[in-house]
Amino acid sequence: MKKTKAILIGAGDRGAKAYAPYAIDYPHELEFVAIAELNSERREAFAKKFALSEEQCYATWQEMLQDDIEAEVAFICTLDREHYEPTIKAIEKGYHVLLEKPMSPDPQECISMVEIAKKHNKLLTICHVLRYTPFWQNIKTIIKEGKIGDIVSIQLNENVEVMHMSHSFVRGNWNNSDVSSPMILQKSCHDMDILMYLMDQKCKHVSSFGSLMHFKEANAPKDGPLRCLDGCPIENDCAFHAGKYYLGEGKGWAKKFTMDHSREGIIHALNTTSYGKCVYRSDNNVVDHQVVNLEFENGATATFSMCGFTREQTRIVQIMGTKGEIRGKMDEDTISVFDFLTKHETITHLSKPKSGHGGGDEAIVRDFLREVRNYPGDESRSSAAVSLESHLLAFAAEASRRQNGKVIQIANYSNEVL
Image 1 (cartoon, one colour):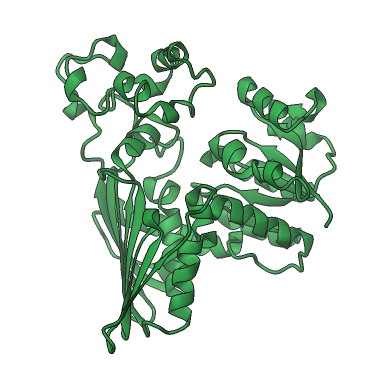
Image 2 (cartoon, one colour):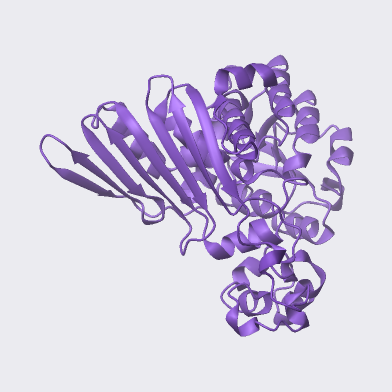
């Protein structure tokens, strides 16, 4: 097997910790030959881990893509609004691309990516990693085998987990849709994609409700400071106090915003970054809860609920068919199938995956490399063309939410966008 050479643009949590480790675990399959990362500490750490020379390290993707680097693929894991330009340039330079979701917060950019990849006959795979997990693949197989008959309705809950909500979507990189993406696109495009994957039908109508209900200034403590460490009057009564959390049970999360993992290093980061801000005085605007209702062309329905106020981080699904029902809980890797005729319940306990996102992080890289090695010009399981449909669904859901739950007809909406 010929080893695939790769470049990485963006060595943050997803690029450096979710996808790149595949080259460590399977060095006969993948080798990184260049890195572009603006943060010097991250760039140097990646270079050390993957044995890259100074000449193989770039501060910006623009500098990197000016050179003719001998590689087959580009992993692009920049922030949401920085996806489009490096992706287009990488494709034009001749690379197949593995792109972190979402494709872009701009529907026109999403469409353009699909067109450019097709024009240059390059594989553009979007990291909808849930499709690659044993959990969702097993559920898909059960449906395809007809064990529950025809799907009538699906209920899917995304439990974000309350501290994950406060870290990533109140204080973190994805807290403001003006500089990132709406919550339904950034966090829950996974879920829109999974619903399309399971239902295997065109969506006809969508409506949505949701808001930023709790993490806003109206709920801030009276006379409370901007930063938690500056003497918060409700320190002992607030679950979100940055010092108490990131120096305690949330120390693992602190590693995502500082390379100095000592207590002093974390305290310095809390005093100088947005992660030390009061959750009620941050510049966040994304919703902390949202529901989406969908009607498909065959009459089946689905409901999706995202909520930041849960004790666990997981997805819970209930799929109701004409012959039976599937229930699943992703964090427990359990799937229950109930037969209406026999009243027999079959419970499957899947083995615990080693990589993140239920095994999807490693599996999507493996699948991507296999497709690159044998690329016939077809669409991948989560190609941009496939992902575009669920992205447009997320855009339509957000449009409905902003219009007080107005029912959006997907065909009309898609025609307007396209």
